[in-house]
Length: 203
Length: 179
Image 1 (spheres, one colour):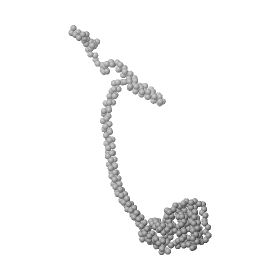
Image 2: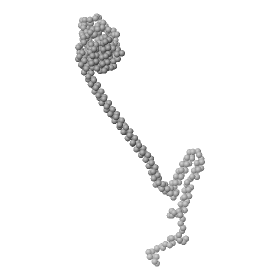
Image 3: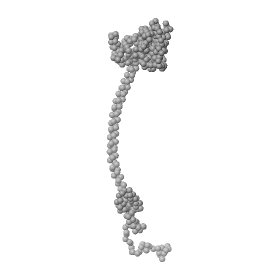
Image 4: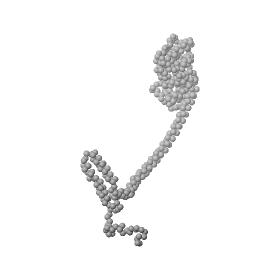
């Protein structure tokens, strides 16, 4: 309880007896109008909510249908893709087989060329192989590799090939030795007539 | 009294169901009490009517929140009307923040109020600045303490004390002039 002064207590008592203005009906009509306005607003809000709910319900239904359709489409597409992938997996094998066939002659040709021409690059390759093997051997502590590597030395074979090539005349590349034609000691040039002048044969 | 309380409770139930007749009857039953509170915070009758109409609309809107076990319906209505009255006063004038340590109490020598009518007292109160008027009515008539007034008006307790001191000084002067 507040500490009131005596005159304040008298004021509080007197104000309780204050005559009130006769505005009962006027104020009620105002209150009624305000309540009606609020009810109308709330009604509109409820209607709007109902409309929104209806729209939302329709959207949900549509969404369900569309989702179902999308799922079906997705399943169909995935099945098609799986089938295609399977087909692709089968097709490359056939093409590989087909591709291998033309590649084989090329390899054979290469091998033939190697056989026909025992050229220097092979020696270089073998040297490189040697160097690599020696380096590897140096790096590793296994000494047996050093002993083995000279045995595999390809230049020995190459020198033999060189020897063979030196014996064959440079003009004739065929390796098969043919039987000499005609009488020994007489060459084809011996049978040819040497023309000194234009009419010397008749003389 | 008990019959009146039962009648009010049944009207409250009708108001919770938004029955317009129940709302009107409750308003008419509470009019005297409510208007007496509204008039203290109003400048004139039109202002009081404004406070009443806005307060009763709020009462009917939030009547579903009223719990009879927590307090009387009169106290609940009074709170709403005072809050509405203070809103009106705030709308008229901004409350100045005046920080003071201690408010000096004016010396009252005699009972001068005895010869003055309630209407004249109300006229004197209405001559006070709005904030000072509000603090005086809240403290002297409605029995709020400075902490509660400060919370209601969103001012400090010191400011509330200063407004009460100012109200007492001015009322003392005016009452002495009347005599």
